[in-house]
Length: 310
Image (cartoon, rainbow, N blue to C red; front, side, top):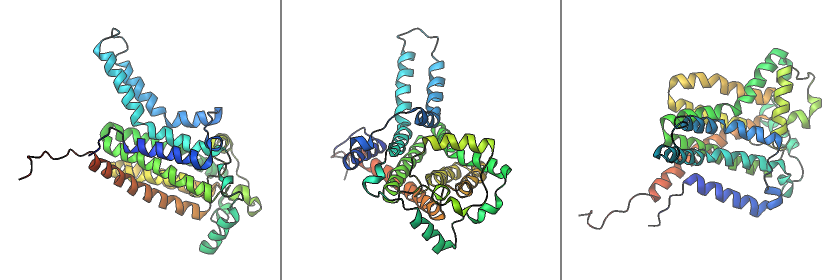
């Protein structure tokens, strides 16, 4: 049987990149590292820098050329490879800074998403939430909304130190969720109810934290990243793997994730159908990542020797 050291996430990343370039073109799919998205990527990959620093510090004062130096160099390479799905996730998302969706769906689908919400729920939830707008609550939920950048690297770091296989499942689920979401961004481009339908709201979202955090996030976010909600999808994946780690971590994570879900509606970024699509994306990503790694293990299994069977 053909054997390779390639990992499932390597194959998935390369395949997704090739498909993106083939169907959208080099110009549309090109990734440009700007000042805004550099901060986004640097924050997500901060655990990598921390792990490399800790690993390197142990050998900082040893003579050059010793086995210890070679060991830390090898370990640095392993860390970079282990965490590479986070980097590709960021690059895939940031590729939508270009108007890639216009090649397939030049018109925004906000009216369609609003109709779905009204048909299913009577109204899009951000409208009834408008009566609850308070500066203090806005501040809290703004911080909760920002947690989509904080929780994934924290959970990943916990699993990286305790179970490398589950760590790979977690990062692979994050990567799969980005690939699924990218299809939604292309086929159902939308800007969200706050921008598409400002007349639906009577109260203005204000506050020092709100303005600072949302301006930072909005500068790095893709222009059409509404359906499905990756905030909801990724935080749901985080919650699942927190539950797998044990009850204390799950209890700590649950209110943070719930607040993150609520913030997507309260801050008028998403329709309810986006939230539901985010949950479905999380379920699909978790199942697919588990199946992919099982397939990888099956493909890499040691072939039986001719004399082993009797």
